Length: 201
Image (cartoon, rainbow, N blue to C red; front, side, top):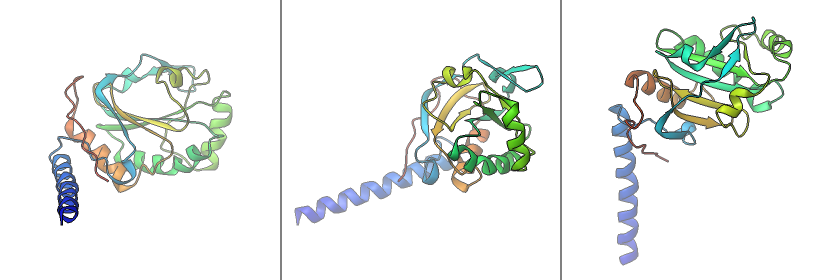
């Protein structure tokens, strides 16, 4: 009898916990990290993106500060990385559907030969919306302390890291879009103001 009661209480806690997390996400108080985004690593508190430069391929350099004012999804990838190649079409679709005044997708290649291999890859895969930024010296990867490719970092409008996803993902899927729409809706965040996350299974 006691075992049945314990099981009932445990089940009740799981259900109500999930309901609370969903309610918080619906109110914009916590990021929706269910489903495919369950492995999203939240940065608490949000930390400023490093001041590091990468190339636009035309003898000019950019930094994350150039994207302030927009929620920005930064994807570090390489042409030799199979999971990177697999997720590229979803990043292209995301850029096409959400890109604009409030949101941007920044793809930065970690290939050592830069545009020499990036350009043919983009043309072969008909990628027309994504930028062809390069980081041949892996400076961005080191500054962000990336452990492997692909790694995708979500920045708020103030240039603070909200969190990151290590590995490939479907960035045009409903779970990813829910997270991105939440970030766009909540606006800029000062360090220490992001509410604690409630993950749901």
